Amino acid sequence: MLKKQHPVKVKLVTDVWGIWRTLKEARRNVLSIIPKLATLQPIVSGKTAWVQWHMVMDPDALQHILRDKLDDYPKSDVTKNLLEPAIGDSLFIAEGAHWRWQRRAAAPVFSPRNIANLAPIMSASADAACARLGDGSARVDMFDEMVKTTFDVISDVTFSGSDSIDSDQVHIAIEKYIDQVARVSLFDVVGVPSWVPRPNRLFQPNALKQTKAIADEAVKDRANRGPRDVPDLLDLLMAGEDPKTNRTMNAAELRDNLLTFIVAGHETTALTLGWALYLCAFDESVQEKLYAEASKVLNGRTANADDCQTLTYTRQVINETLRLYPPAAFISRTAQKDDMLCDRKVSPKDTVMIPIYALHRHHQLWDDPDAFDPDRFGEGAKHSRFAFLPFGDGPRVCIGSQFAIMEAQIILATLVSRYKFERIAGVDPDPVMVVTLRPEGGVQLKVTKR
Ligand code: HEM
Image 1: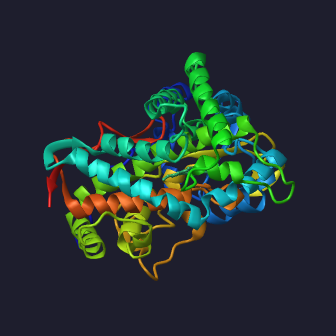
Image 2: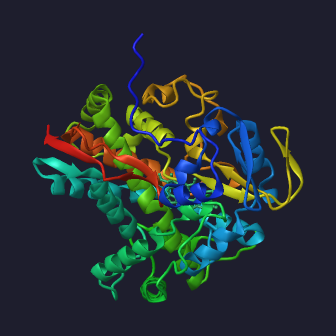
């Protein structure tokens, strides 16, 4: 039988590298320091400089780290120190009691009902994307388009709608802020072991100050004015209260968490959509099946929250995209206690890395792992829960995962129902993890109106 052609992938390391080569490569592409072995073995350990590290790909061990022994495997200090100037001690980096109360207070923000209420903003952004695409074009960078589209969504569900602040000003501030923080995106820092060299000055203090000032103003304005008719993430977070301690977020905590949502949620969702469109162009039969579903369910309309239940194949394509190109391709923890992972001794201070990219392409966990096959996520298909971790798992699982999935379903189904996406010879994207798992060179596609 002819083996299925594979979509683009990262070249994993097969030889044993010296430290200088490793560091040099890591600066260019973090994924390239993942050894090929990580797709074949349950655990790979090593020592680089004085840091003992373990890459873990065994689902049981991952459950242990992420769910059962959460307190023994906190996020690394390096993450915290680097990100605090930008996002404060917010949900993404806080640990222990300070993380727990914030998580409990923020949980209702992302309830299915609240997310569904925000879906019209997602549908409007999908329409705006179609308006930009117009009648189509011989070459469009669809990753760039998806960055614009998800930016519309995230800025409209966070600080927009204040009377005293011009919404363009909010957009510009958020854009500048993302530009700054993107250089040390959450996952880059979380993922990159502490020994990888980093630029000395990560943020321009002025740009951060300005954004925070605008965000503070928006929080103040909202406190005076009360919630919008349809509560957005800021309103919901303001109403959030930890049921255990009755604590609510003060203005600085609200600001920091909103900024965290922007950084954690915007580019990740754009990447999911950009890669999904590349894959649709890569495999035309998948695109046709997606088109058949979208045109049947939508019948010319723009997708909305109610459609998401019915758009099951769209959901499968999104899951398979997240498997092949997980935006957070690498997360890591620092061990606090002596422990055993897959029969290997782990000591306090060891770096425990979870190379989600390698986990999702592991030969013992997935059949023909580099092949694109949305049927892996079809009804009745089974995979081990901890073998598929695009959003992490356990108590620190991504709080915005349902929001992101709904947004991706609405935008992907709407686009595919109206346009056909085709590859352009010789310009396939190159998966590079500089910040997140990005398609270098963009996702250049021929776009034709249906
Ligand atoms: C496809 C899109 C997304 C992906 C792939 C993604 C991925 C992840 C992953 C892997 C984690 C866990 C990190 C770790 O354990 O070290 C995480 C956490 C988080 N994500 Fe997402 N995310 C996405 C969208 C969003 C959105 C839309 C939001 C908010 C609007 C968001 C907010 C957060 C927050 C606040 C955390 C920290 C939660 C905690 O520690 O309690 N993410 N995300």
